[in-house]
Amino acid sequence: DAGVIQSPRHEVTEMGQEVTLRCKPISGHNSLFWYRQTMMRGLELLIYFNNNVPIDDSGMPEDRFSAKMPNASFSTLKIQPSEPRDSAVYFCASSQGYSEKLFFGSGTQLSVL
Amino acid sequence: GENVEQHPSTLSVQEGDSAVIKCTYSDSASNYFPWYKQELGKGPQLIIDIRSNVGEKKDQRIAVTLNKTAKHFSLHITETQPEDSAVYFCAARGYSGAGSYQLTFGKGTKLSVIP
Image 1: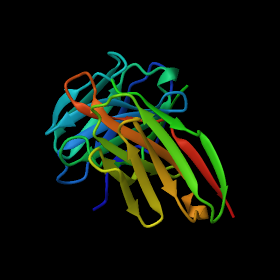
Image 2: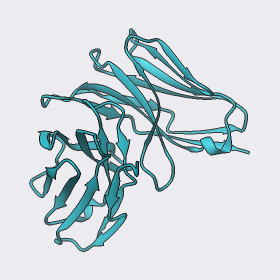
Image 3: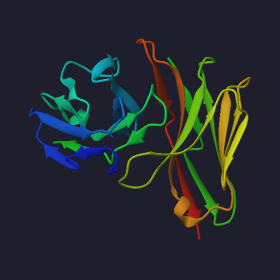
Image 4: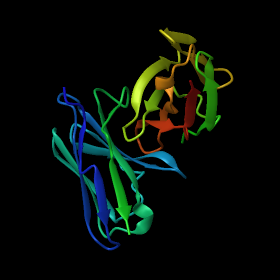
């Protein structure tokens, strides 16, 4: 299996622009997670999907952030408009069952100038 | 929600020595405690996990211990090798407060193994 696939690996954009991060979970996994990693706050859960349905979005920072999972093999995290404080590494992870044994992608390094 | 504290934030050991990383958690209902290893430029990778009904688990040079009463758990790496150098994260699965059980991660420990 190719593992969790994220794209792009790096994204540099200017403040105010829309950013879309993409994730393909491991085939057969029914749970998908978006995390944000920063030096100050560590790994934070943004949103959790189960069977393509958002279950817990309490970690989404504000309305500028939105996530979708149109099918079992694809998810997006969108930031509109982006701000410099959104600069971080964004990870997608998937698992079977509920919140155990997460498999992480390689992440997207986002820089908002 | 759950709160996980991890210490130390950095750790340097000589090759062949042991390394110990400690974590405490706040939610007594938490029942699953994984450890992840993150190498530079990569995502975290699960290396070992333990459930609340077990006190210790070993996998070759890696072991994890859990003290439910004190609400702390530790990662032990014996006979360290340069390839063990990475950032290690502990986590605890507890109620998120929003209708689901989720992992809360510690801030990480940067382990450096000196050849």
